[in-house]
Image (cartoon, rainbow, N blue to C red; front, side):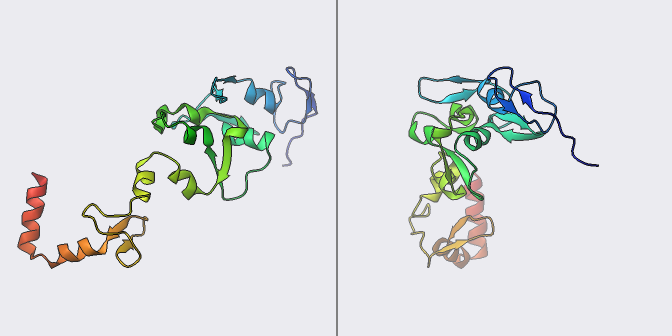
Length: 184
C-alpha cells in the first residue's frame, strides 16, 4: 500500500500553498502553530493549545505528536542537530521561575529563545535536583568529589569512597545501631 497523496492546498489564513501529507483543515503548519500562541511582554510566544503531562506544548504533524517548541525551531531556524536538545534560554535567564510543571517557559515557542545543546548542558542550566547535585564538589561529610575519591554507579550517581570505607570499617553491630538511630 503506497502513501496517499493529497493535492496542494492554499492556507485559509495566510494564503500560502502547502502540500499536506494527511488531510488537513485547510491551514498550513505555520498558521496552526503560531495561531495557537500569544505574545508575552517577556518576548516569549506562549503556546495556548494542547500540552503533555509535563506542560510542554503538543501538536500533531503528519499524524505524529510533536513538541511545539521543536516544530517552531525547525520551521524558522532549521533542523535541530542530531543528538541535541533545545534549551529554553528564556527559562535560564528568568531566575524567578521555579521550574517544573508550573514553568511557563515550557510553552514558549519563540525559536529565538531556543538553543540546541547537549542533554547534560540542558540539565545543568535547569533548577532540578539533578542540576543542583551535579555542581556539588563535596559529599555531605565534606570529602571532595574527585577522580580518586568518587565512584559513579550505573545510574550516574556519585558515591564518596572515603565515606564508604569508613562505613565498611565499622563493626556490624555499630552499623545496625547507626541505622536504628537514623530511622528515629
